[in-house]
Length: 323
Image (cartoon, rainbow, N blue to C red; front, side):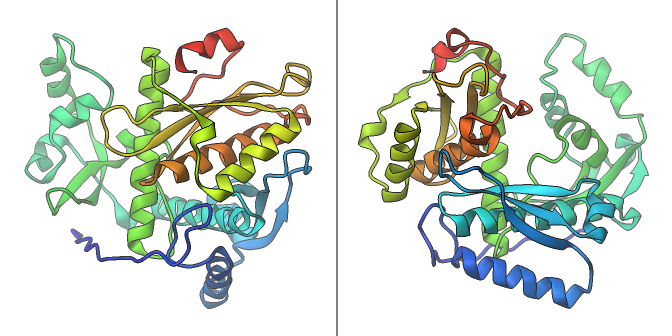
């Protein structure tokens, strides 16, 4: 059924590392209390898994039986500038994935129909064409064929137009998988997280695919205390980090970070290229720095990370256009 999302003021109660309405300790406490209420085996334990060389914490949230059955994996990962934030990130990642896949597997959330039969309440065809960058000369013919394909539809809410809208769920899931699902301490926090993740994927894909030359960021100008501390940890470990402004024309701060360790690359580490997006540019940099730590396992563990939106770089020369 159609529904409405009403956003209200959500005041920051914690601003170390990321901006949240409560501390990460309170987030974990609330999460564990909710688990007791639902009576499901969702979380088995949280475990810190980094080896300490870079000293930026990375956590696993190990799935309980019920969560593993729904999600299909045994663990989720979380990162942060402090152990408390990394643990909170890990449990919220678990909450996000469990909720998302529970939604996906509930048939009551969907119905199957052709676009031509739901077009008055559905996302415009032009927007669907843009989702696959189809602006070719035969786009009209393609859209006509598309309008006759049975798809799985679900209700969403357009926050800019403030109205319900039907979206072809399996169409976008095929393209994006689980980019965009988010969890938070309140609706507003979750929406902010989800919007930022979508923006992050958008700008990253453009920078990578179009090989855009973006402005560099002088890391010596950073003022955030925790970000400064993390940069000192990178320097102490001998890991080279380069930051750049991925915001493009969005008006939402996105920071890309390229990092590598000259002492361990390529035998025990890789070149990591990732990005972070938040409403605050220094928090975006913080997010990117912790994401680097999560992806490469302290730059000495021979870990192999799976590339996402940004292309995995085979050499520094491959990434010089963005440094």
